[in-house]
Length: 171
Image (cartoon, rainbow, N blue to C red):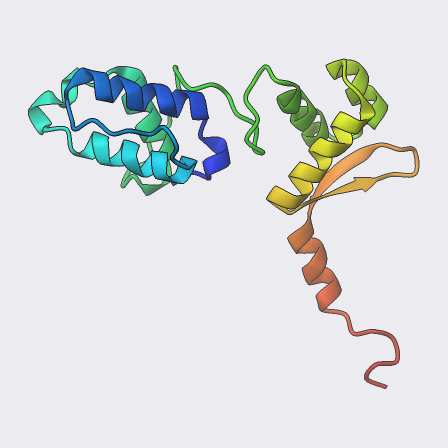
């Protein structure tokens, strides 16, 4: 199953509403559910549709189901998703400021000022997004002497440091 941040909320809600309206399966209420519970409801609804009625399920609903559970499929289906919005590795949807910020940091070698000018936003917004990526995805932002930023994994950095004993510790 994909990470919950990579599943677009609006598409998930639309698909559940479509299944509720189609009378192909039992109706489920999702008003105050968390995202992980909505995914469980969606999976239950799709899997409870009888085999003879599965052809009546709209294409975008099937595509979302395949997108969510792609890694659990027995055989990998390499295809482009026609109805799914493009997402960054950090869960930002294409066309948003966060998506542009993610893409610029992934490319590397950019300053906060460059990103702020490109996105037409403030430096504080960029720094808040950096904090979000750092805490949610265990990423580290490394700044060169010229002020340009690059992304590294925090996990790899810790394992490198963990292998070295402090000077004079075992002498």
